[in-house]
Image 1 (cartoon, helix red, strand yellow):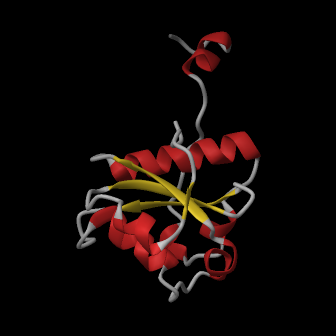
Image 2 (image 1 turned 60 degrees about the vertical axis):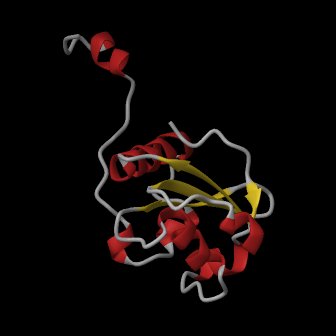
Image 3 (image 1 turned 90 degrees about the vertical axis):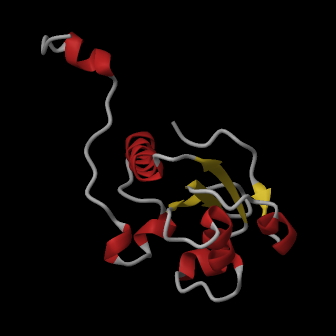
Length: 130
């Protein structure tokens, strides 16, 4: 469910190469550990490119991203809000942590209420229908 692309080292040139589309993105530290799951919607003037430029442009307010953000990967997706929620739920399920460090260090508006992600066959095994 997450983005299955290689990490791109953040540079002005790499960010300029990102298309001006809506979608989701992830930011990692130098070791490739996931720090942040974000989205770029229709209110961003240049979509993903604008959001990534904000994070890596030197004025990042989030201390975790400012100090540890090293690389990114992105995916164009018209259903960016739903996709981001799914990615956050998958992170919670896979890591037993509530939030990636960069999301946890953000403000309350960046922390949506999430459901629990589970496989559909879990219900069948418990006898809850199919």
